[in-house]
Length: 375
Image (cartoon, rainbow, N blue to C red; front, side):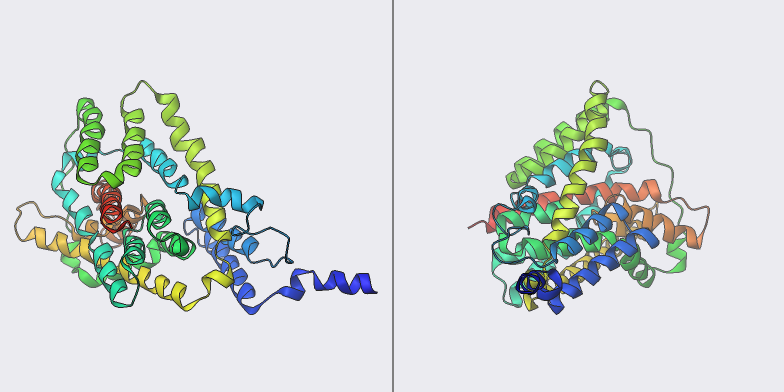
């Protein structure tokens, strides 16, 4: 009976707290959203199941979770905590991204830049709420809706907030189809949502090859802190567009990005332990992240409306919402909202221009913040 009693005291049931139970329910909710609603299953399913795994209590002296040195999960989390996984994700994104639409209509790059306003306004708000400059920079980057960039910057500026920031960034990336449409409809009229845009011009292969090299040099010289992310992004794109390294490009955009996504998503979810996540600071970060993402979406839409005051060929303001760098999810949302108004209005390719510009913009913003705020 003593052995049985001792065993019962070492079970997860005996040591379960209300916080652990809450986070397990949150993890199950994420898994259900991924499977039933098909909300970004490649992100939500690993994160959700990781949250379930990370909140199973263990007895003292048994290293199991991501924060305990020597545990298996801590080795998986090493790629997150040291900023290794994000550049590999950027390599895969570069290898699957076509910059043709952006090159054919360069003014749409401004929409990607405008959406980054969410980053800097949230930074100011975080400072006002008592976070120090480094913490505020790491929190603000959530507004770019770019999980890898948020992880990379927070690992450099505020490692103690990494778990909360990573969960917030990836949650909002996954919930793009829920968050963005109401903001887009609120800020646009029916007439604006019905605007048809002209087909993009053809971009030569030479332009596609020159672009990643030239763009990297410009971005890296402006913000040296972005070299790792921007370098891997454009290196992946050069692998794709050079047409001489197709095997490498295929590996980067398929096998590699899938493996890294599994490891990153699962370990980020496992880091969302109740003891570290269910705190007033973490919940405040989650709220600031939501505000940042909404501001970024609104900034892109409103800037598109502003541009229409000065140009002859009108832009459908909906594509401004794609300026956040959730690739290609926000571009798909633009297409979905546009086609609800007019089934014959195809905005996806036009929306990809500010979408990929947003990826570049958020990485440059992260590089600038790292350069300015590093201690």
